[in-house]
Length: 128
Image 1 (cartoon, one colour):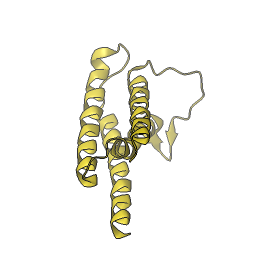
Image 2: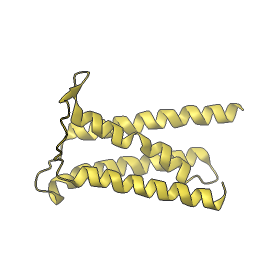
Image 3: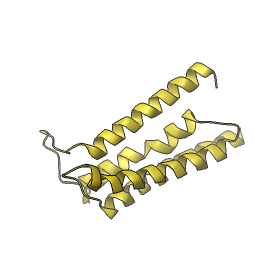
Image 4: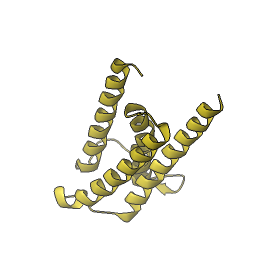
């Protein structure tokens, strides 16, 4: 990958992480009328899933080193550490947020689906 593209992807990844951090540590209040559930799943869990789904995809592209699979594994490890840390820090840094194991499960599920997407991409790349 050309250096300009690598820098662009890294910048996009950093912006993504800043957005996730903002969502995790903001007060969570909005003037929008949001539904309370989506297909019977609490909307909060859907948001956590959606926040962490792009992590393995963006991270693997941004930090692609010599071994695509090693980069993917390190990115997923980093994603899980950050998901756990953000969830744990919510109750310590903010006044109105709590640590919720169900939120962590939604984070990890989002990371897992993003990982599956990247595994399929890796297998398709290997085929061609």
